[in-house]
Structures are given as structure tokens and as C-alpha cells.
Image (cartoon, rainbow, N blue to C red; front, side):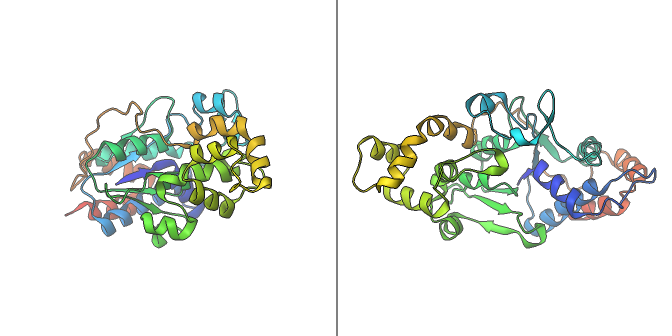
Length: 297
């Protein structure tokens, strides 16, 4: 099981009231929510291996060089700091400390996002692999043959959407292998990706169904293929510069330099004394107790 850690702790922060505090009065809602989500996931799916995947760089320079607007609207300051709520930022180190004391592996790589860490570990094997995320970009990793599926948290962990290839076809009208091209065409305002003007989800799915992939679609543009309506040809032709670089931004890396981690999920905290100290300091006794119970197999 691969956790998109930032996706989950942001969801936890906004889903659990900031009135949940440590004994010193500092908010601890994101940590408690993340731990409770993890307890639920472990209890429901019983993974034997688990990694919380981290954003070492939330806006990698190589992606920005290709598409300067990439996540630009979420920059809070220099140098490219992510806009993070003041009450959330100090909770992230606490969460990482708790995970380390429990023995839950974390992984990241310089100049790569958590998506890329997940993509690399998911394809490194062995499977099956469950990817837990609220980021639709990771749908491109779904592979029935390799046993890679996405547990999508769009409606919360309690109402996870288990996505395989059939679910992707039913929801978006494309294969998982086409999803990156689909997202490139459609665009994603939340990531600062403009897409092709006038081409939404249905049109993008129809074009890929007709031409297979972005390369086939651009070949049809070059050839003035009569199967491509004139209005769509004009839109795609006008977007050539964007379409030349955006796919590399949208596609999740499979070769990030992720170090080997010990990803076996422990059956009990590996450092119980440290866990107890952290639980007392931050008022996390109940949440850590639930996670400890979930680990028992």
C-alpha cells in the first residue's frame, strides 16, 4: 500500500476540526486524522507492506521549466514555497516523527513529487499494489495485469472508490494507459495546466478513442485527417507548443531515485517508548492506540 501522504494530511487537516489540540494548545488535527485514516486502511485492506510517499519537491524545477504555470497559483513565496495553512505546517514534522517511531516507512526523492515516488515504487514491484490518493493524476498507474489499483479518497477514506481499469473506462471513457494524454488535453486548473482550449473531458475521451493516443492525434493534425473535425483541428493546431511539453509534466515518473526502504508493516511499534512519549506530548494516545491495534495481525 502506497500512501500519497500530502494528499492525506491535507484532507485530514480540513476534515478534522482545528479545535483538536495537543496539551500545549497547538493544533494536532492533521496528525490525528492521518493516523486514523491509516488505521482504517490497514484494518480494511490488511497490507503487509506500506510506504507513506512524500513530496521532497511539490513543484519540481524540471516540470516548471516545461510549463511555467505549473502550480504557480499555489506559490506562497520565494523560493517557490507551497501555500500551506499556518496551523498545518508544524504538524507535518510531528507526523513524520510518529510514523518513524511506529515503524511505518516513508520515502521521497529530491526534485520529485509524491506522485513520482508512488509511480516508481508501484512499478518496482512486486504487486499487487494499492495506491491511496485524492489525486486523479495517479489513475494513470492503474494496471490490472500488475495488480495496481487506486483507492481514491475523493469522498473520504470511509467512502473509498476502488478503481481498476473498468472503473476508469466507466467514469472517464478511456483506458488507464490513456489517462495522462486525456489529462493533458483536458487540462487541470488545480495544477495550473491549461489544457487545449475548447476540449473538455468528453471531447478528449472521444479523440483518444478515435486516434489511440496523443501521438496518433497529433499525427492526424499534421495530416489534416478528415476524421478530425475542423474546429478540433484548429484548437489542437493552436495548442502545439503546449502539447509538445505538457505530457512530460503530466506523466508520473517511474524512475525517480527512490532509495530502498524497509517497507514491511510492523505488527507493533518498533520504538514503543518513543511512541508513548509522543502520544503523551501531543495528546495522541487514542489515535496511536487505534493504529497499534490495527497493526496486530
